[in-house]
Length: 479
Image (cartoon, rainbow, N blue to C red; front, side, top):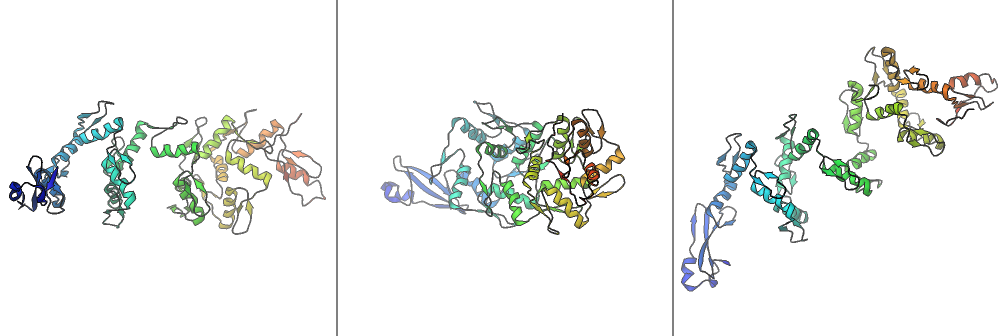
């Protein structure tokens, strides 16, 4: 055991004078220590700046460079400078690609020996760093330090630019890049730069297709650990994020943020072209395509292109005929869950969307948006060919077919083609015999609303007659 020389009671009398020796050299104090069993004198070197003690002069000199900022070791390739030769050697391996340290268990190779040592602990399970407060154990000392700060709340690293404080130096370094704009990590494949190494690793998987994170429940694979965690909540039903206003719960923090904007009315995403604001970035991206005309979603069957993935899915169902969503009331089937929800309101009469200007109510949010343009006069949909503008995207599509001659809607029975989905549906009723429009006076049924109107005019005593369509999409069996 080593004792400080100032405790002279533990020393033999013959060693007292010798052990009281102290000398100041280059700002460092050389304290003496003695092993009482062997009477071996050991020099303990103390840093004159911060008081840290060392047993070797070389280690003290390297430590002193923390205070002086001296970095005598320079990389010939990129001019990076280091305070220690060992750090310089490790850095050089980045340029040479050399990885001389190999794991005997799995063959993984490393450029630095301490990285190999840390890696080996994954196989051995050895966690040498233990928390004194809760007995938690860690593979690395840095992880223990970070863990300890959760108890102390200590944030020792401060940003000189904005004053933000952090418990870890690494977090401060990442934060500083927000101010400097530095992106030191570059993708070798496409040249994109990133501010964090983790972001680069995640990005590289786009090129490699690697998905190292796998769900134990269903086998789904993901390129990011965060994506796996979010996915697992589908199986567990866990929703850890709660709204303070209405107590709604969500499985991801992103979904909670979007939800909160319903209460706050915040719309942080603004269109640079027309100034329209949105609460979600995805909604802004979709909107921008109105101006750019971009249609990134293409149908593999007929080549039709769409600005939104949802519109493509709807279109594809024309070819496949798939309708997995069924109404419990009337049996009508739909290709989209949203269409079923909208349809159900036909039975319930629910109209949750209300116009702030005139009080009109609607069963669909899209109908409300279209209606509002009656008051605002907004016509955001413009024809690239002739410049005509429309308040509804559907009207623009119908108009464009005049120029293109496109008729994407085809009858499976007779092959007739149509430029509008509504015309196609009306035509199909010729083959099916479906007549959804019924006269309340005499019970006559019709396949088209205009035919019902013509018929009703014959009942002269019912001038204020209003059309009452049957339950939409209900199949009428004909003999």
